[in-house]
Length: 210
Picture 1 (cartoon, rainbow, N blue to C red):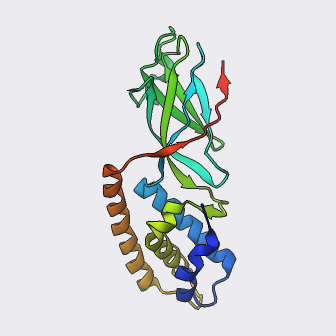
Picture 2 (picture 1 turned 120 degrees about the vertical axis):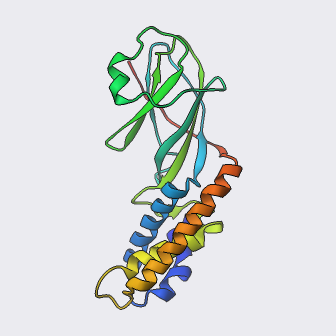
Picture 3 (picture 1 turned 135 degrees about the horizontal axis):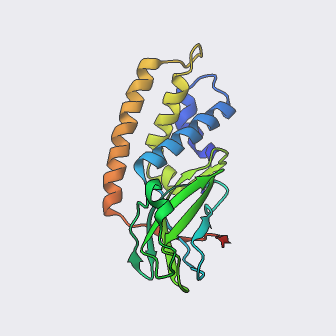
C-alpha cells in the first residue's frame, strides 16, 4: 500500500493553488472509479468453510482502505457456482440442504453478504474472488494503482479538480482531454486483466446467520 502523498508530485504541478485535502478527495475518487471500471484489483479472499444449514456469510474487505466492489466468482470445493439468483426467484429458492450450486449477493449498509443456494448440508470449502476498490476514507492506495496505473489515476484526479468552477486551475477543455485518456487506459487495463491472474489470497471474516 502507498500513502496518498506519493501521487502529489504527479498532480500538484498541474493544479496551482490546490489544497492537499482537495487533492486527496479527487485522488481517492479517481482511484475508486478506475478500480471499479478496470477491475484491476481482483483478488481471492481467504477460503472458509460452510456451516450446515447456514446460507448467508458476510464478506469483509481485507483492510480499512478497501471496499469490496463486486463478487467476481464463487467456488465450492473447486467448482464454480452459478451466479444470478435474481430477486424474482429468491422467494422460490430451494430449502432442502445439499451442496450449493448457486449464489447471489446483497449489500446493506455497506455490508456485502454472500448467499448460497441450496443451503449447504455440511462443510465445504468456499473461495470467493472479488474486485476491490479504495474506500472513500482511504489514506493509502494499492501498490498496483501507483506502480502500474499512476498515470490514469493521477490524470483522473487532475481532471476532476479542473472541472471545479472558478478556481485558478479550472480548465474544462483540458479536463475532457484527460478523461478521454483515462478511458483509453481503463480499456487497456481491462484487456490486460483478461490475461492476468488473480492476486494472492487475503483474509475474509464471515458471520453466519441461521
